[in-house]
Image (tube, rainbow, N blue to C red):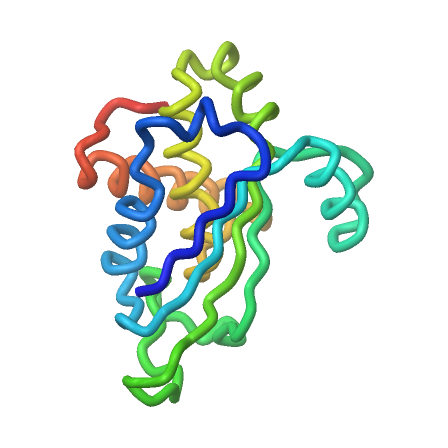
Length: 163
């Protein structure tokens, strides 16, 4: 797997966080191939606000955005993993990009009782699950299932009890 990480803003909250490790873990647990590529960027609230407005029509910052690249056209099985993307095993599959607003993440620590590093782990898992087909906007049941999967991923990576 190719995990590209760029830290434009928020290096302090990324310190000690195994960004590549959690990404590889989540993607493997979600059945993604070894040729999967993902980019992860930590940036300013202003940049996330701009992207949120431009691509989602929502004129405010948010904590994490996920942008699917090659995509699977929602052909996911029940657990969120894709069964056959039709991509040869040796060709790169550009799953997508995750953009995290480091200051929003930092601000959420008070609300959720987390450290900045724990919050970053939560947002990484959340964004990766979106790229793997999970969603939470259509129903409370979807939201509960996605939150349970997030907790499962965090615990499986050795970070139980976050959120």
